[in-house]
Amino acid sequence: MNSRRPPQRTCIACRQTNDKRTLIRLVRSPTGGVEVDLSGKMPGRGAYLCHSRSCWQTALKKNRLEHALGTELEAKNRQLLIDYGQDLSKGS
Image (cartoon, rainbow, N blue to C red; front, side):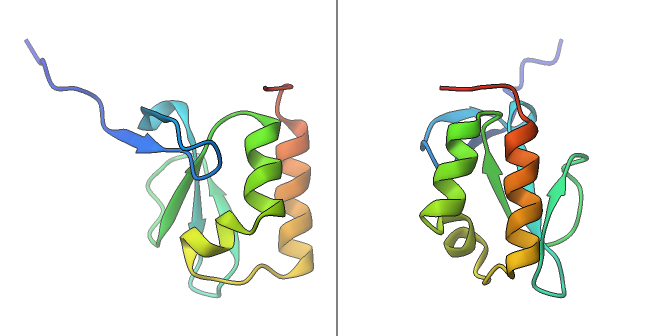
């Protein structure tokens, strides 16, 4: 029997720890942009967010995502991430 615990990660917005698979990974690409990594296997520095609109809004408004990934978001990239967050089901 495999009794290993699943890997835990922390949402950069609400600071709640959860199973890695229940969070959405964002990764800094080599060009400096930020992409949503649904597979969780893309190379590069990653940060995790909950599936909640409020966490996405907090991460983007307070520049937590930029700080966590060590990059500066361009306006177009920021808007793509805002749109992705808006498409999530309403969260707390």
